[in-house]
Length: 188
Image 1 (cartoon, one colour):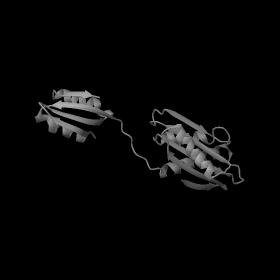
Image 2 (tube, rainbow, N blue to C red; image 1 turned 30 degrees about the horizontal axis):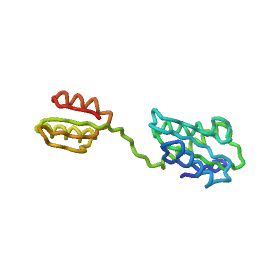
Image 3 (tube, rainbow, N blue to C red; image 1 turned 90 degrees about the horizontal axis):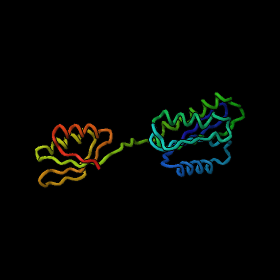
Image 4 (cartoon, rainbow, N blue to C red; image 1 turned 30 degrees about the vertical axis):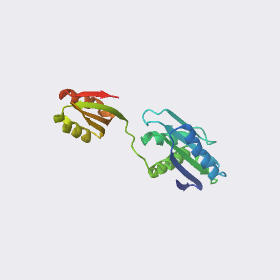
């Protein structure tokens, strides 16, 4: 949560993780309960991966159309962060900011809140099964280590069978690697 003042108007911004609309709306309800006497509770959320979200929504909550919710959403979209709800609360200070001033004020509050938000990177993983000769096991383990993969299980039969997880973005590269070494690969 951040707070700042511009021309006697007080802006309070919250950014919280939200994996679905219900969670996002509960953050808004919490903000309204915490600051019931505020004039505006403007918000935007982006659910899903930032480049292809499942859903986005915003509200100006009584501010002139396009001066609050859209600037907040623009900040979310440009920060490359998904699954987030951002609420900006405004206490009117008696001095009108104008449409441009509101856009700048809400954008600035949203940016300040995003700076304080702790984030973690989500990497889509896929499961693979690799069957190889005993002599190739270390080659496979090395490839997995250098490509952010992880070994989940290994069994030794007539061949080494490695159950692993790799980032989806490396699937084609692993396929080329195993094809070149004539190693059997299955994705699950």
